[in-house]
Length: 199
Image (cartoon, rainbow, N blue to C red; front, top):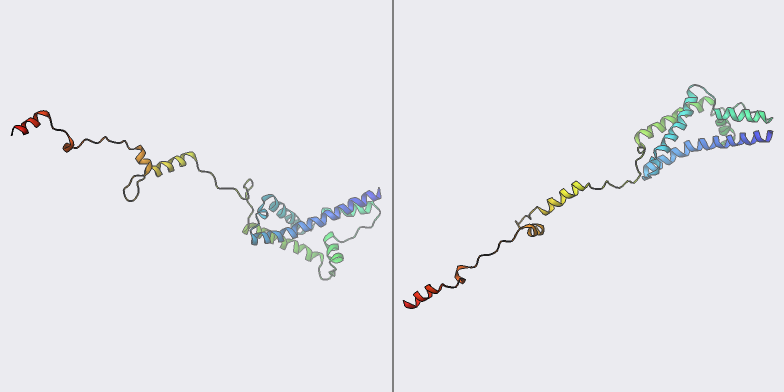
């Protein structure tokens, strides 16, 4: 049973490390995407989860609350027979993994850093907001409505050119008027012809 508790404690440790990486690396990717025009960094779900992740950590620092993940990890290690550390997970990460002395980065300094990071994420959220939920990242322009299309076609067909020449569509729609024969080509009546001969 002790082994099972240790596995759970280690799983929480890995999740805790991923949580921190999501906040830090996620913010860096948002800045890079802002500068390069990446569309996925404006995903509303990603941006909302990212902000809530750091906002909860900052809230813990404001009320001086110990991280629940650290509490659960310590309880599981204690149940497995290990002696849990008195430091928080972030303190152990900074002091042991990053080799930064405790007198340089204290618990109070870490709490203030949570609030600073939360403020940076919030400012980025305002200056570079995500898309609205349901809005596609590369949605095409809306198609023209049938009414607008018909209106545009009628306008194009019914407009004469600048030189006064009707458009081809007008020529097709304009009825043709039969031409009247010229008077000069009309043959003379028989009486008129005889009168000319007598004179």
